[in-house]
Amino acid sequence: MRRRPMLQPRSRGESRAKALDQHMGSSDKLDPRPAWTRQRISEALGESAVRIIATIAKHAHAENIVIYLAGGVVRDLVLERENTDLDFVLEGDAIAFAYNLARIYGGETERHIPFGTAKWKLDSVAINNLSVGSGVVPAEIDFATARTEEYLASAALPVVAPGLIAQDLRRRDFTVNALALRIEAGAHPWQMLDPTDGYSDILGKKIRVLHDRSFIDDPTRIFRAFRFASRYRFTIESGTADFLREAIPVIQRLSGVRIRHELDLILREEYPERIIADLSALDIFAQIHDSFRISLRSAEQFKRLREHMPKLPANSDDMARLGWHLLFSGIAEDDALLICARLDLTSELSSSIAGFARLLAKVDWLGASTNKASAITRFLDGISATALRAGLICNIDDHSVKERMEQYMVDWRHRRTIIDGNDLIRAGLTPGPIYREILDKLRGAWIDGEIESEDQERELFLKMVKEAQ
Image (cartoon, rainbow, N blue to C red):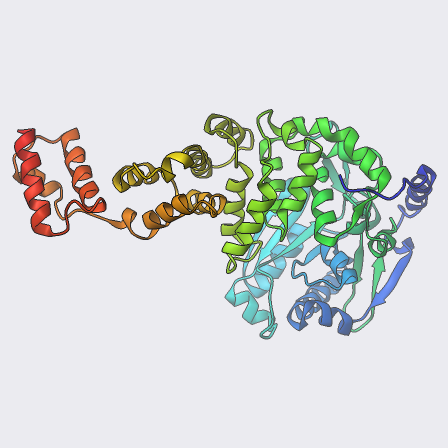
């Protein structure tokens, strides 16, 4: 773990909690932070986003609902970073509110009733009806009912109940994410609500939890702490770092799905290797599975990934999939499959990662000059395109391996025979394994340069048929 600031007195956190508790009776009693004008929001988020916010504020006002822009987007406003993810918190029924917007403007809603949340997915009809102009428009907008939550067991999902915005902000992971703007119709400045002093922590570049059991209640916050620290170049406040270390064993209680989600978000960061190194230094991957050990070359491989895949944005699906493979560099196939099962990865991704492990295990064989191109092709045919790309990144400096893998990817794997199953039937051969054997040998002859024309293939085919008969 990187060097942290000195631990601040615990009394500060206790006094902060007491001060917050005094606000719990009404959201109007929260101490406001500096006002944000419509123009200032427009400069940060773009005019299209501001028009959407204004429209939502108008409907909230008409329905007598208090609504807030909350979480990461407010944090990034303070940091003057672009963020088009619009998350709203309502002191009211968020699901009904989102459904009503979709009914009026178009699009669809995805509801999660146990947590009182809904996504409004904007389609072309909704975007047109919202009259947002030509700027960047989010694909979906999140709505949540302000809520309280209680953890009945560590690492378990919480039990939630409707609450006020102060309670909702208090339940969040870090102070820097416990910020909200009260959105009101019209051109009024929007006031920032900051009951946990997150604004000061943003200015001080600190990641701080809201209470000492935060990581025990939800160990996924361990992954998020390092992700935010890396993204913003913040430090993890020393008291928070102590709480984090104490909670590391609780990661074992997390479901594979929840861990997978956090790792996927890490792999979509611009510099995932920094976060992976921090987690690895604390043996956090070993808490996921005993065999989950990060390669010492991991940082180098992720850097190469950015260099050799420059057209892929850091948060793209393709980049994340390649990152998943690099995460397993140096792990044997059997162990890789066990880890994939622990993380509840899809069968397709698990199979691809297993192929990647097989590939890395046979690097020396691939580079040996005595191996025929057809033999290499038969081996590589069983490995996914993503695993091949990841394997190429890992072996970019081994010229013999690199050359053979590139030849396979651009040439050998595309070679096909002219002879097909119909020719085998006409030749009088009984259907069975012999069909695949002959076609594979014919394809291999093309790849190895033993035949170079259709006539040569048919001549070799007739010879094979005669031998088979």
